[in-house]
Length: 425
Image (cartoon, rainbow, N blue to C red):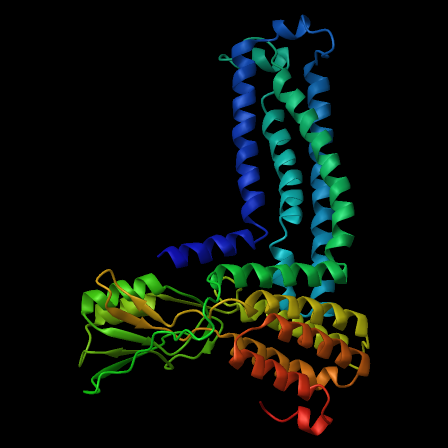
């Protein structure tokens, strides 16, 4: 449940509607609070504060109308600029990079500020009334101008101008190729640290292993959806396995694509499972149309590889972008080099093995990315030399013999012929 909640929060942070919606609701609450305060405090206090201007109903309406009209116009232009930026990034850097722009809090706050200011002014505007309008309402007593609410509207207008200046500066920076690559590279390092927190101790240590029971009693649980596995709830699988007194082996991991009918899990220790148990096991997985980096450290690495491959295509021919992608990619590998692979076994509170997962390993991560990248890097000798130099630095940071062997193999492939490079690892 916790993994599913984290995924939902991640999706909310990567949406263009959540932050603006929260800010719009906050603006509605602020307008009600400000007008209520004006009704309670009256207008005598403003006459004693000389640096504040006492508005008449016509002036307050004109001011609120001007701010509201200008804010909705600026909001429309802002939306247009944002969509153009997203389309440009998708075409220039790859469609999978859109998620990074969607998660940009600066764009979300900018859109939310203009919408919230517009909504606030509209709601306050409806409370302004003249003496003639008050005479037609038996519940109204004289003219009413919400002075505090109007002052808040002025403050929001000034804040909106400041946000607009920030937005004009922020958009060119956000689509600059170096900043895009750096953002993805930092995301790779952050997820390496969160998914692989343990450092390597003794290089000769042996990880725990598990073998299926000899009786061979097993049940396969198949997927009911089609898409990418976005999240796998390990705690939920362990809990359900303990309740059913079985051992569960994961056949897929976050980032894998599954089709309806594909095997998800193998359950050992039970001839059959109830429909409720099978449903609980399936509910541990969240399948969607897109990949996310929340539990899939391969995703940001693949994004960097995709950008490097696009930069090295004959139509673009931008080796410097490829240099940056390679530098950040190997930097993520360096962060992984001295960390343990995720332990494939999960135990319950009684220290009984309940889950055997399919973790992402250092060898699998580096092989999956460099097998795609090296054939394209070989088209440019400078890019290939840059990749070989960065891999040599990675080799110096790595202590485990098995990992050093994999890295050295790819260093050797950087100096082989193109036909040898295209061969599988």
